[in-house]
Length: 431
Ligand code: SDX
Image 1 (cartoon, rainbow, N blue to C red):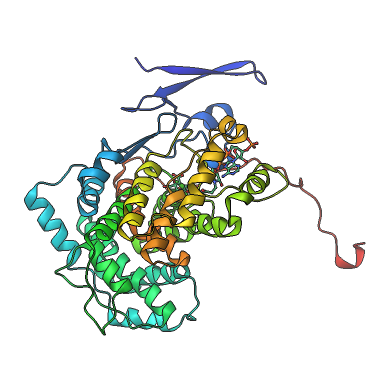
Image 2 (cartoon, protein in one colour):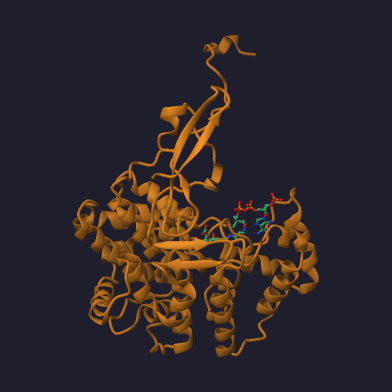
């Protein structure tokens, strides 16, 4: 028997039964697909705070409990026991790979890490001080001009090749964006190195000497990729799904996701956290900053704090904080003033009634920037690293959207509050 809720419309003194749908976990949803046809009314939910845009099996978040599951596996366990290539396979295929499946997947990704030599020319058109995210939006969008052999989104084989290409080439493109900004030569990927090692070498290696991997930093990089891999229907993932719903090719859709992620309220927050800590400078200034964050007339927000879904600790932030201590210890900078300031800021904020009442906790971006800065990345590269890691989540969600039998082009409606119909006034008659 279908569960239902009844909507009582006082304007027509009518009642409408709307089906109630249950998922495997999480809140039930009211199926409003027939609402307009039966009532003539739309729903209104700016920012989609209470709106389920799709059905998905990939990631589950319980914001009240601070739970994040990827295909049922908790982020804590994946960060502790898995690696990014295995998490990519899990997100794309729904199950952890066996040894043969993992070896084949890693080989596929490894053998797609190079980019076309003509694409290298695209970098030359940017100023050297171009933001790496501007470069990534442009270069990733341009990939669709190179891979006409994998643009048929109705062909599962094409979809998987495009997915592998995107996951594989992101580290190469991101590292090249950094190299271009510092005027150093591009390094090409090596097939005898892991995904994280390749990215660190292409970023920090130079032709003049052999680059030596640091296992602690490589593990930290791989874990940072895992922590950023996917996160349900966040703004950039919803952008990728909406772009994909028109039938746009996967390269263009991922470029749209990169553009959305760039915003400081979303993936740009990790860069904004470091800039904020720089601006605060010392613990003495924390109180003033918190007052600014609470002041509704001041656009300043405490970057790295708060979340649309988590009203508890972001489980990724806890793992990130632990990784932060490991990396700073390894680098011999555990007394890094930025980390001490961040921990003091977190302590003071979590004792402040404004943040407690609004359930504002550190999110994934609060500690990630401190680690990346300690590893040698400029703040301008932080969001590019987020985009690199989130590509697998975006493309897994894109594949799920394309394969969804009920998916259709996304086309929200509105509540119109503008002018009613009026006659045109010739220019000479206007005041
Ligand atoms: C990411 O969606 C995802 O899953 C995103 C992400 C992912 O993995 O894809 O998790 C990645 O984007 C993490 C979030 C990174 N952004 C930041 O750290 C920027 C700072 N955070 C805020 O901008 C804010 O918390 C958001 C954007 C993250 C969430 O905004 P919401 O959902 O619109 O928050 P809200 O308006 O419901 O907040 C409730 C109250 C409001 O005050 P009142 O109107 O109730 O008085 O809390 C206030 C907000 O003004 N508030 C903050 C605050 N965050 C919310 N006040 C000060 N500082 C903050 N950081």
